[in-house]
Figure 1: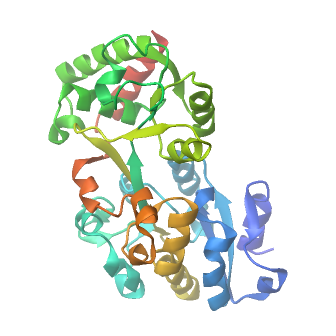
Figure 2: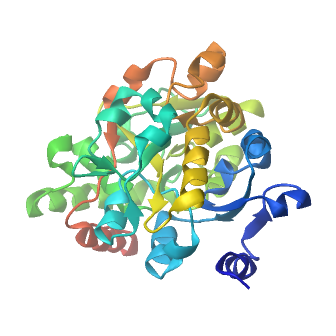
Length: 355
């Protein structure tokens, strides 16, 4: 049993196996992609498989931390492509787990939006180790029929009207970023706050906790809380806004002027991959940044590619859903970074929750 057969057997509980008919089992190259489930739908990938003599095996991750742990434990030798967050690539490169990507073999990368071309994240010494792949925002989502006006970050820290009907994601990085934005701490200082600033963050987070219905982990649970009216406003991912609006509920989405948290995931190639398998993997990367995949991701997600490849193929409504109709929205983004004192951030967050 070779390494790939062994890995497929070991991952049988989480992987879907070969992403193609049984006849593709004899394909010249088998690529294993470790990624999020929503990115690797069969119909998204069928055009690539139909055009190339490859098969595709996929295994799904639940968190970026889980993916990183698997690679550090030796999984890099058995995985061809991974999907780390743009802000997390530095952990992988610091552990010498990735190889730089040859842009000559990924021509669609030339279509990256300027924001992603210019970001220093995902790069080391001028070489790119994680190509921005898809992106979005984490806004405030709210029941427009149950709130008097569009909220901003202050709704989680001031007033009493919505006490017990607010929700915040249980994630120290984003929770503390939101408190910092509310306090007016500039982005240039946000990820390296001093003791005085962190003490002020803790103070307002204690106020916030007294106003919350819950800290959420599952977006489906949050969607249900919105549907029942138990939660009227939350720091959220985008899907509940569309899911519940499609069910006839009057939902709103707010992008506070103080800043909106932007996120971006990348595609990255583990160190040691070479030869035909590396070439096939980079062809897959090029497809993931191209128009066919981008259109399906936009319509089916809805999520935005980090390139403009599919933009002109989308209707105005489809462009609006994924925020590519007006790219100036990125001007208000606060992109997640890794605070040097993040262990202290986590300890602060846990202390607030336990209070």
